Image (cartoon, rainbow, N blue to C red; front, side):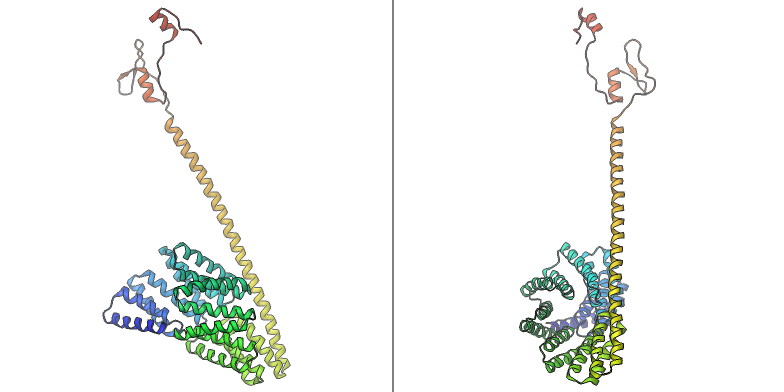
Length: 446
């Protein structure tokens, strides 16, 4: 499990520090950074930063690219989306330069998660489909392909395309259960829990969430545990069990705060505030919702800001402070309009880029075909010239025997000279005059 894996890696790291070996040390540090990323992002970041220095100084481009990818994931966990994307771009540049398709596929998957976290689902799907294509191209393992299908399912779930999401998750579940990849299986169970919740099959939903929770606790996946606890809170809130919902939300918040996951903290604060509002504990609700709203605005998370604005509008309505309720309601309306406009502008920009790209590709193809045709014609011309030989200039021919003098001064039979200096083929016959001279008779004319 995760704790055992981390312990083994830490022991290995201790031995390598005593007897340094550049490549092995960098590799173990990278593995450790990834292993502790969900449970302790700050420690993971320290490992990843150490790898950056070592890999760059020692000239290990693959490990350098991997460390940038890991840093991208760490920044994503803590809500630093700009930094996350910057790290991914650096990683992508190195992998592309190396021609490492497996590496670029991994980066595409991380970029997809960055877009997904910001609610840019269309962009996320583009990158995850590209990741899947590249992983299939380089013969990736079934577990790696399952990871892509999990992310595709998450995107479809966000788009409310429940059947397509469920199909992706079920495909991944079969692979993970067969391979015994428990961390990934927990993610599948978690998402299937969400799907069955949407379909209002609440008992099945709870069972899948519990399966995910059991695995995530055993693997010390704090971020995953926090996420599943939050979803269990949402489920119990839907079922009208406010006390149980509140308990799940509070435990979730504690874990998000422990690992420094600001996005999760903001979401859970808003959820707790919503429960307190429903319970009539309005002052406590105000404290949590305002905290969530503040974080979402700092992180520029439009989707979650809209969620928080809805909660705070409900709160002030419940408090009877209608002026504040109206103010936040207007902010909610503006935020929704801006969000929709951003989505529309993003789609227009993407379509424009696609149009320009296709236009350039078509122009390049036309140019390529023209060059191919020109090259073909040049080849034909060269072939023709190769086969064409002309007899030019003055030919010195003996007036008596009709031999021809060549450029070197030698006399040749005329048929030999013609054969060597042209493509003509010589055959022999007898003309009518010679036939009479030689045989005393004429040749019948055709």
